[in-house]
Amino acid sequence: MARDPRVVAVLDAKSFPILFDVDKVEKRDVFTGTYIPSTSLTGGYRVCAYLDPSEPNHAKIKQLLFSLLLSRKDAFGPTFRSNFSSLFATVDSQLANGGKSDFNKLNDVTSFDFICEAYFGVRPSATKLGAGGPSKAAKWLFLQLAPLVTLGLPFFLEEPFLHTFPLPSILVSGDYKALYKYFSTAASQALDTAESLGLSREEACHNLLFATLFNSYGGFKKLFPEILAHVVDAGEKLHQKLAAEIRGAVADAGGEVTVAALEKMELAKSVVWETLRLDPPVKFQYGHAKADLQIESHDAVYDVKKGEMLFGYQPCATKDARVFGPTAGQFVGDRFVGEEGSKLLQYVYWSNGRETENPSLGNKQCPGKNLVVLAGRLFLVELFLRYDTFTGEVGKDPLGAKVALTGATKATTGPATE
Image 1 (cartoon, rainbow, N blue to C red):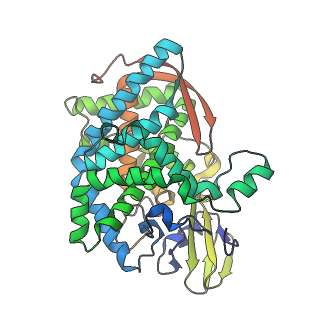
Image 2 (cartoon, rainbow, N blue to C red):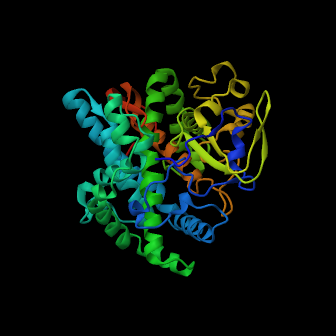
Image 3 (cartoon, rainbow, N blue to C red):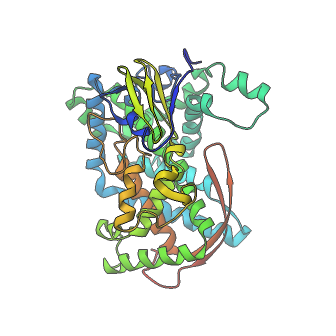
């Protein structure tokens, strides 16, 4: 599927940031690497993720996303809590009745409702889209990611059917139309903003759909199970520390989960950052060299020719032992706590930029970077206001971690969960 599958891989913490320098690398049509999904999957438009910052519509679309996030900032926390408190009520019921709860399955449904309601104020399951939204989105996502996915099928099936020819967009055309119809109605206020920025409502709607379902929902489908998996594996000692920090901060805020309270949760922030370091939602970053370059790694300097594709495999760069030491490949929940820990944040790259930097109209860093870290903390808050500790079975699926909760001890101290 790739016109030229060859790449120059940058694999350590020193060489990787070349991919963030849009003066040196071009980011046009490299979001999914050496192949480009058909624009028929996005209404015939090249959406923002595939645009280089030099292209005129990049700044307009990214400004639309910034405006959306700003306009909905006060709704984000309450919407998260209402949706995820319902999820954990279901977990409690399933544990009481059957002894096991499939978190990923619940999260797929809850994250879909949450992110759409948070952005647009309309819960999809309460519209004509009904309960079918997550499955429609999953099929649409799969068609775009199939060439990058390994399902574990026999080679003679996986290679010809997933990695040789693009799957036809007609397989999800009906699903996409149903999703688009929801966005065209629910996002009407954002679409008004888009017109004021010089975008057509149609192009803006396809971009909002992509940003919400591919970037945000696709990310949360992976992030929350990864956080839960690491916290389950870390065990009761970390649980006790997180519960004490979270409940103390909420108590100091009068029993409310406020932004100020969240900012005090240093260990919770560290756990989210450590998860994003080890298991970034998007493992691959790409860019074409704009000119002949010399790229420096820890050990050498390499010549790269104009036009060559640079490929960053993030889990290598963010597990660099030269930076993170002998525990680089391990989950250390408090790695980013304190002054020394905060110095390591510049080497956390999950957002297509350094964690110490911020998205702008002129770069390709995720516009929702800070919102993702906030959502991760809110997830931990929901867990530890509700439970003292919990157990689970951790496995893997094609996206990442798969978690089934097998037991939980309800919170005995601290603010009420409701």
